[in-house]
Image (cartoon, rainbow over the protein chains, first blue to last red):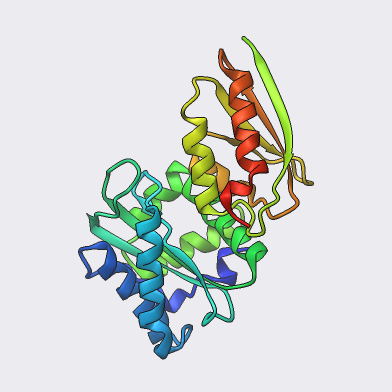
Length: 155
Length: 93
């Protein structure tokens, strides 16, 4: 699997307005709705499910990144987006540090393998110091999309 | 330095998703031994068992065979406890 198969470029948010975790989740789901990738009527339910998931254990896995995710019956095709916070957001991260890059992933309820493959792609890149650094520095949606393209091409 | 290893198979329905991977990493970090997890399915990916970011790269679905290898003074109890966690399906279905 590649980023291009699930990250919706039009829904990338290069400068998040939200200053807290729940606000960021709402903003990113809203961006997917605006891009037509998630049904509008499902937004509240998805945000609630994402918040519930964070409360069970933060997806702020350290080093300034968070990967909030949920499997949900209202999602028919795996979709995701990326948000960038300039000031950093408190995600109750494992290393207690602010989060600057948020990769949101919404998966159908019954496609476990596909979900794991998407997580594989996300973490293969996020564990690289250079990828995290460039992601944090990319100030436009286009720059972020290009970074993902390069990762997809194995650069 | 003592080493120990165990071969296990992921048997919970959802596979090694974030929460079980986190449980594994938390348990691995309770031991001083180095812990590595190798996927025996095809590509032979190897992950640091103490790093959540690396464990997620295994993308281990139900049925994936894994080898847990520990190296250090508590290698044996480490692989035993970690294998038990996987065999208990992380408390899931």
